[in-house]
Length: 52
Image (cartoon, rainbow, N blue to C red; front, side):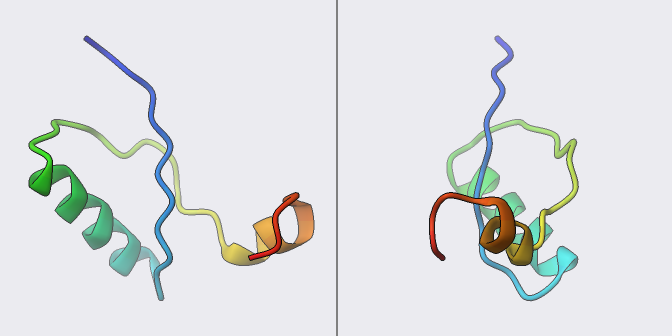
C-alpha cells in the first residue's frame, strides 16, 4: 500500500532534517523514501497561516 505523508521536523540543516526523518522511520518500522527537499522555516513564516 502506498500512502503520501508530510512530516514536519525542526532542524538546523538539511542533513539534520534527514537524520530526524530517518530516525522516525526506523523507530516506527516504516519503509519510506524522501521525495521532497526540506522547506526552510522562513517559508512558513512568510506564507503560512500559523505563527511559528
